[in-house]
Length: 537
Image (cartoon, rainbow, N blue to C red; front, top):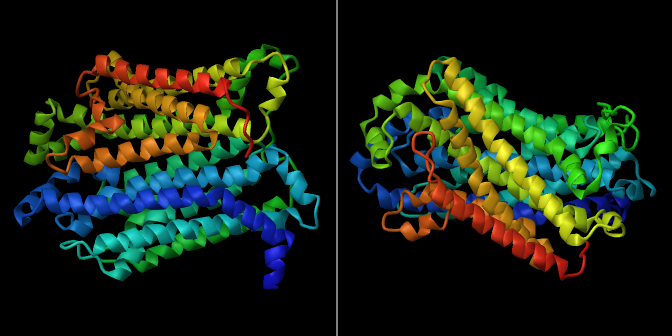
């Protein structure tokens, strides 16, 4: 039996899926673990006394809605869980969704699934094999993360137990596990990968909103059990561990994966449970040229991202007034906002909230680089290049569409934030909200440019470079503020140069420099791409 798994079609498919996902799984595992390690080190250095730590813990309450309930935040363990868990779970969820939809629905769209099913394997067994391979990549992510979390627990003053560290690592990768399964199910429901990503992204957004609502009031805490992000929070891994909170994660993953395998055998190849929308006759006449084609290919996933960011912005504005009382009761936080030039507590909260929208926009920008590379790696680009379309025209078209999506995403987040705030009579001028949204999109243009530059030089490394900039900038910005005398470190993050709009006026000169650097990098990438051979996967 073991030999059959190694040499039979089931084993071949599983190993192929494992190889496709393993590199990113390990990279993100390292990032997650280092995030924990650096956060512990920074906390212990920045807050050496108990008095400082207690004051810090009190100042965290206003951000409960964004990052969860800070439990025992006066300790290194409690603060690290609060600072790291939600952010890592969201990033892991995005990776899991993209990995599973790419390995299943993406492979089916590219025609690779037909080659698999031509052999002695059914659709259900092939789907199960892919999920097994993705599970292996998830296991590698967990092992890398756990090793670094255990190392963080050995730092003098951290005091993580080995058992607590293992549970913390499980909580950190639970988002990836859940959305690997969600992506697999969405791949059976949606007729295209764009539909599948939109379905999974919608579930991710709803899950995050439920977690935010649950943490907005003690009386609503029971809602955490309705959200995968709430399950991770309820594990409380390093202080008062609740191992039982793992049960809904395991049950949901197994049940969703089983349903995906079942549905895979009940549909036709290339079809989904939801039918693909059919346009009217002649509706595709506008689809002329590489720019229109790039827009057509990008639109389904872009709509999902824009809707998610708009929903997040609307909720952010809606709950802003409820945070005013909490913000006013935290002298440490008011003083910190004052040092940043922020005088209105509510606007400060909106500024911090839109910072996380900016992070999501950069993740989307990195995903655009991945889509560009995928079009070349899978050979789909060849169908354009054999026609009167130059390489430069194709790549410039993809970059232009990606920049437009980034800008629209920022404007949607800003507009929705204004609408949510206005519904609660929070005074935010509409032009200021639009400016804040556009300001949040600035780092996305830089990430896109760096990714295209590396893509032009070393195509396989393009997506890695883009996601690497996002991960490094996010890690440095969150942790660098705790490290005194390390201004140079914070300056290496693109987010550090982002004003907390609408609480502050956007620094358009700095924003222009960041965008121009991104455009210059993209231009060099276009030139390099025009001088190299097309490289396949």
